[in-house]
Length: 283
Length: 265
Image (cartoon, rainbow over all chains, first blue to last red; front, side, top):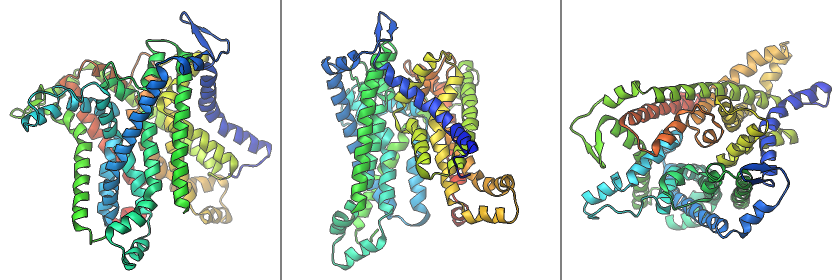
């Protein structure tokens, strides 16, 4: 099983790498190359050009949309972490089988159909939806509110709802790894519960928080279905613009260039998450 | 973690309960709507009905999408489990080559699906491979390979080296060792990986939308219908799909939980 430099070993290595290279590396490479081509009246022009990237930087539309999208996804990440942290903390404080049963319960919605969840969220948030109906029944509002109908607020809420489990898991794992005797030591030295939390638990769980935030951010920024479905016609996110380049706008090379920009943002987010996580863990 | 934080623990429990309710709300809405007639957000609780389920059995459009999803799912499982297991066996996850291999396998899983999907779309177009369910299967396999590979690799690493050495010392050939020692030990992980792969493939929407041809899978079909709103039979289907997914989750959890933990439950 150990690979070696014999002809047989090289053959095996070739076979092992063949598939990932053909189906993963080659498509991604073509994708990058495509971003340097252009389209003229619906036909592809295979002459290398930087025009697509030039358009991204000079057109007044794309950078603001990217910034808005980043702010949106950072907000989603922050809300998910703020909501997910107490849940993870509570789960980690439980003992025995309850701990993992409840954790599993929190994670099950992840495996449920994405499209169906978006649809359900839309029917909850909509003008005639359950949320408005409930608020009206409770007498909080007297006519249906359109605050969460087909706008960025709706996208923010929907993404948060979809992605919370992704925040709970990493935070739970980092909390679970904190040795109990550290907390015991803190109490023995006279720290109160709040002090122990702020000085011991919280700093030690920050790597989990960092990876939770970067997970959620990456998933939120790559999602083009949710904004399309609950965002209405006006709230454009970056992924949605990319998607439209391959549909209505039919400009694949430009779409590829925008995707490369998205990939760079995603890679930065992953690196930041990882860096921050490791730094804290090393202390 | 501590008993001295009683009010705080109560608060945390409350938050957890609320989050749980909020997470399950979107799942409950279609299930309830499948049994009751809903008009303008107000459900008619007085008369539960199975009409939606009857209508579903006659909706050929949806049933053929379901069939396509099943075909794609099983093909994806067969491909990803065999390739993922072979890759894990080949390198056992150590050394620079293994790190590179792992990085490559994980790329499509880490990148946003829109990028993986678009890269494959352009690739298929450039090599003039017509888009069909075959391209969907390839897309899904590329996407779920990382999960199967990782699951099998984790089990392989936890497999004690002495077991393999003992088998070889006792005169078993490499093949015998593989069939009698390694395979039985990783079978559970392979099965768990297969269930996860199926669950992911069953639900995959973003890559599928980009690489599919004329026949679409269930999530893509649902996606197309969603713009117009769902008829009651779709709610029935949704309820069935959710139950099926819950079964898959339980199955995956059982298969992936190590035997000693299982005994404790």
